[in-house]
Length: 334
Image (cartoon, rainbow, N blue to C red; front, side, top):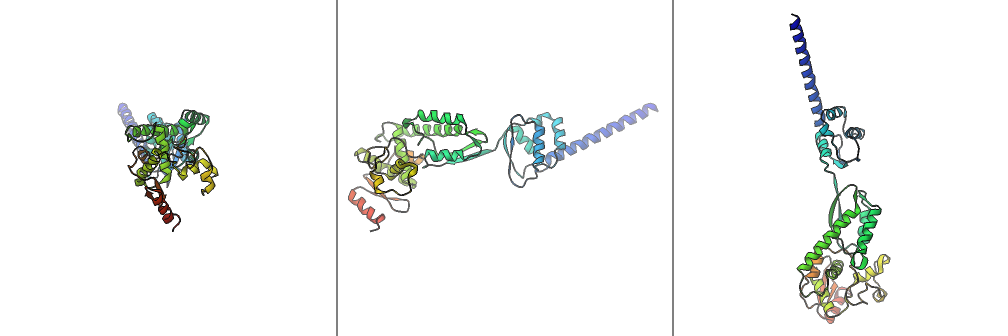
């Protein structure tokens, strides 16, 4: 009888243990399947060295998860779920807690993006980069830029970064993106140099880059770029001045008020192509791929002039007489 009582007692304890274990499993399963409380995407940053327990507390304090008691128990039972990686993560309303834990373990941080568009100058790009709160600017950034500039033709960053959309994690050093854009431009420039028209009047790829920057500023119509390039190449071959307004504007610098005056066309600067012959000493903007392609493969044409029609496109002319007529029609409205 005594043995039977003991066995019954043990069986009862085992049953209660199994029920408790099953209840705990059910409770923990509910905890990881609960949806987040947020109604819009939210960023959460896990600092290096932060424990998983502190991260859970942070989630509760920021009202992202309702109650983390069960999750603390779960992480004790399954330590592999507590191997959170530092980083900045994006949490969305449709996520469940299990997905959040998986995200922290995976280390797949939220990637931010910045679109550096063609036609802007280095100083404008630099300010755009500085405005990104998730990029880091420090002494290393400045030192890296200074070293890069000193190693470039003309000691200038102008033209040397490839316009594109760049993606980065929070805390990325800005010089990382600058280096990436620079390498992209070097590779693309070299590739286009290899397939250039054999008669283009450039002694080196850098001259083509300068030309591409002028083309970029002269027209926003993609189909016109090879034609614009053809005109400038013709003028270079005939030892004619390029006489392009964007170079004058670049030479004036930040003081340009938006209106080119007659005196500006006559004022000598290293960039005033109404005064100097040939190309300016550096690019005047960041050219895009289409402008680079046009610079190295210009349209074969007899045209030497063009004038803006007022709708973004241009009227091209072979002779000065034709050009003057076009100026009267489109600019002077006569």
